[in-house]
Length: 265
Image 1 (cartoon, rainbow, N blue to C red):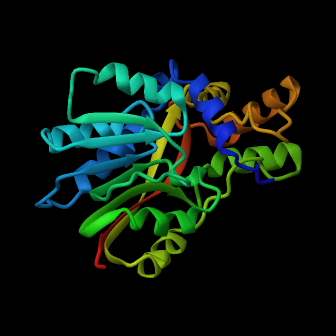
Image 2 (cartoon, one colour; image 1 turned 45 degrees about the vertical axis):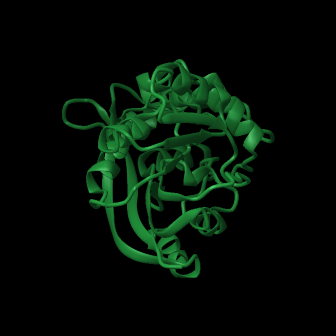
């Protein structure tokens, strides 16, 4: 079952997790680093927008790459934005705003727009690719990391086997779905990489707790009914029996797309 996504629910959920996010968000840290490492060298970058900045994993890397360039980070969750504002209060070139990226109107354009692990939370994902592209200056670059189809396979199968229904949550489009939108958005596709990234947990319950820890538990989402404690235990045990590694730890797999494009308009 696909959960209906509303920006107010997302804001509440991720704000509530602002203090615990960095403890649990190792995968988000890894993918932000990978996106920054893959970023092609680019001249004439005079302005940067980081969409869905969270607590600033990617924003920090952008600052290291472009230390004197104005960076604007936006996030729908006030708690996340407050963490960033406190962390970089002394850096004049960095600013952070509470904003829903799907309705954001910055009144300016940018030479580089980045986003890591945010697009999956958009209601209109493919339309948002085009909408954000309109904020690029001619020749500006788009750099995005996003989970795609094939993610969370262990948890999806465990839940379905125990509960006899689909795992409630997001539905991830394919990599092709994202890449096919770039031409329509007036973007020149540069390159893409699709990679498997795994988080490793000590137990099934730890893996399930991690979603609450980063704000992705759906607890605050309207229409969502959480599993009973008994069902949670059953899903956890199934997950452990069928997916434990040789050392007893448990993988949780994401299929991650990194794509890069340039504005040609």
